[in-house]
Length: 87
Image (cartoon, rainbow, N blue to C red):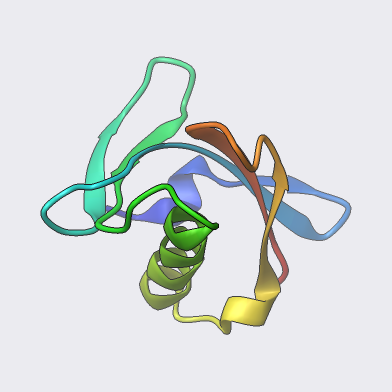
């Protein structure tokens, strides 16, 4: 899957909306919702920020960028999240 098809550019910063499913057997892309939101399965449990950390690591690996360039900016405690990506 090419993530760049689902990233919105605003003021030279990329934004991505994802919906995660924690406690999966492995971290992977699952599907795309009708509004363009990416569904991602995350292996980590949703406790103490573990799922968020796993999500950031997964996206960094997929985009080939440093984890410090990825930030969850909205809905940190929800399954749907808004991600900010500095390239």
